[in-house]
Image: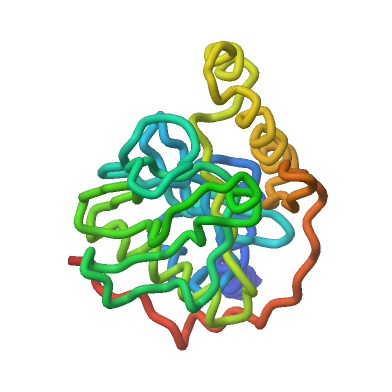
Length: 245
C-alpha cells in the first residue's frame, strides 16, 4: 500500500507544480526559470513603465496573465510624456499592438520589435514618427533599448505567442505605475489629461489580470472588456528558447 501511495504521489508532483503556477496568477512574482520553457507559445502581454525603467512580460495561464519576468530598460529618451513629432527623440506612451510583420530579427540594433507607432490615437492627433522599437544594443533615440540578453528572451516569447496563434501582442506603455498616489504626484503635469486616458487601462489589468480592450473614439482612448480570441494550443516542445549570450 505504501508503495502504491508513493507512486501516485510521484505522478502527481508535475501536476501539482503547474497548478501552483496557476494559483499564483494574481502575484507579481516572476515565473521560475524551470517553468519558462513550458510556457513558450502561450499568449503574452507587455507593460512598460518609463519612470521605473521597467518592462514587464506577462504570460497567459488559465484565464489570467501571470508575470513571466521583469526586465530593466537599458535606455529610453525624451523623458515622460507621449511622442508627438518626428525628431523629438521621445519614446512613445500609449496602447500598441505587435503582429508578426513587426518583428525584426535582423535589426541593426541586434533584435527589434516595432511597437506600431503611430497608432490610431497618435494619427488622430497628428503625431508623427516611425521605426519606434523595443530592441537590443542598449542605445536609444526614441526607442526602448534593452540589453541583448533581455531582448533575446522577450523576442522569443513574443515570436512564440504569435507563431502559435495569438493575433497580436498588446504593449501598454505608461509614464509610471498609474496608482492614485502617482497621479496625484503628477497632477500639475502638462500631460495629465493624456495620462488620465491611460489610467483605466492600467486599472483594468490590475483588477482583472487580463489586457484591456482598447479603442479610439473621437481622438480619445476608450477602455473596455477585451474581445476573446481563440489561439492555437501551446506547442512548447517544438519551439525552444535559444541559449542566451
